[in-house]
Amino acid sequence: MRSRLFAATAVLLPALLMAKDYRGAELRTRQSYLYGRFEVRMKAAWGSGLLSSFFTYNDVDPNSRWNEIDIEILGRYPDDVQFNIIPPDRLNHVHHQFVPFDPSLDFHVYAIEWTDHYVAWFVDGVEVHRQTGPHVLALNRPQKIMMNIWQPVYEDWAGRWDPSVLPAFAYYDYVSYASYTPGRGNVGTDNNFTLEWKDDFDTWDQNRWQKATHTWDGNNCDFIPENVVFRDGCMILCLTTPANTGYVDKTPPTVLWARYEAGQVLVQFSERVDERTAATPSRYAVFPGAQVGSVRLRTDGRSALLEVDSLQLGQSYSLAVSGVKDLAGNTLQGKVVPVILLEPPRFPLRINAGGSAVLDFLADQSWTESASYGFEEGQAFTQSPLLEINGTDLDPIYRSERWGLARYNVRLPNGVYRVRLHMAENYFDEPGKRVFDIHVEDQLVADNLDLSQQVGKHAAYVLEVVTTVRDGELNIHFGAERDYALLNGLEVEPVESGIEGTSQYPRGFAVGPSFPNPSRNDTMLLYEVHYPGELEISIFDLRGRLVERQRVPRVEPGQHLFRWFPKVSSGTYLCRLQLRPDGGKPETVTRRLVILR
Image (cartoon, rainbow, N blue to C red; front, side):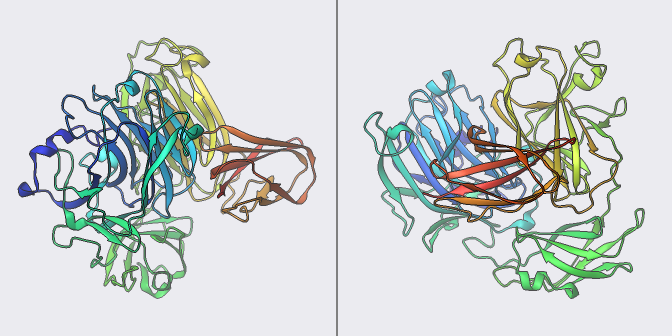
């Protein structure tokens, strides 16, 4: 990660030298802390090309003794939180953590436990990632608690930047610090930490916090005090233009892009918009000659679906929008954008990750609003054309790879698909060097995958998954535990000859949302089985660890109720229901359960 690889230059660029395009913000403690539990409740900023953070950092002598522990939330992702350690050698130890929620839509609790032998990260009270080893032992300098919002210049990491999303805001409800007191504490893992203070941000405690006034190479912002605001029980970090600073939105919303998808036009706004005006069909026009029917604002509040007449491939269309208001009351006076039309996928769809078109696999490409598939983050690497890969006839596919990626996405009609991920370890000679997790949609399909351990070096490994696409996108998330995740190739094809159109659930059974959710005691799931078979219900924490499992050897068609009496701490859990219908293939649905104690 390149978030602050050049942060040492910050001390050389004081506020008097402001020359950056944008204005960001940072709040930091005056005091430094050696070890402890650092916790925040925050709602991240949204938008490709920006990030909001909570981290610890040694600012006393970073050039000689770099120490940093990160929680960074990139606004481009709807399901990801990034963790990182940067020790004195300045090598990054990045982990992309899948989360079953959009960090920009609501507040969630994130925490770091830093001790003399491990660093662990928590989401909503559940430990989701831990690092040990020499790089952790090298973290031995006192560090300040910091939070910031900024716009990196690194498009391949933070995503393509569009200043139309400004102003952007990150909200912080509280921050707490607990000292490391093994065996005699009152909070954290095994009560090994003692709560020292908690700041609810009702006011600015100037004895504890200071507002930053610096920048660094790689940061396209200057940090200014005006963009750190305390209001309504929150500390708010603002990312703005130089002309409109502070916590105020004077900019009308705009349309970033529009794309046609199966009888609907998806409209992406630059910010959350007012539902009443955004759901009014008369505020939209698709031309030439397409009639707009009903309009529905999605739950993210930033995108709308327009029912339209069928649009013809090969013809150009435009979308005009006017009269839509944002939540601050600013009105979009008029915006015209081209409508993106994509060719329907041809199955089987095969992609050569990290490489060019070869055999019948398509060339790799980055993910954009006009791409039918592509990667997010990562670097391409190609091995020698003479390298032989064991266990496959697809050697050219396994010779190229995309490594360090966070997600791979494919636009598909809603339905059930068989997904094959092709991977090979062409670098490490022994197990334990590269380990990573994979989520397909919201299902954990590979936990601590170690290719060297599974098949050895220069050998093909194929992970096959059957999954359901419900929102027009197949999303594959990669989370590195050690070194970097990789992908060599991807294949996607419908489970059957027909595509399910707008089917919301797998064919064998349907599962409703859990209720109540969040829950303090028990929670319930109503599911309907269409074909008899065997049912397995498994509950995992966000690290993929099994919490509870129930098997129903025989379940008959009809409606059924699963009731869970959790014996777990507060946090977010994933409930996976897998039906094995008689004579059919297994089908899986996952639901998110939030427990509040």
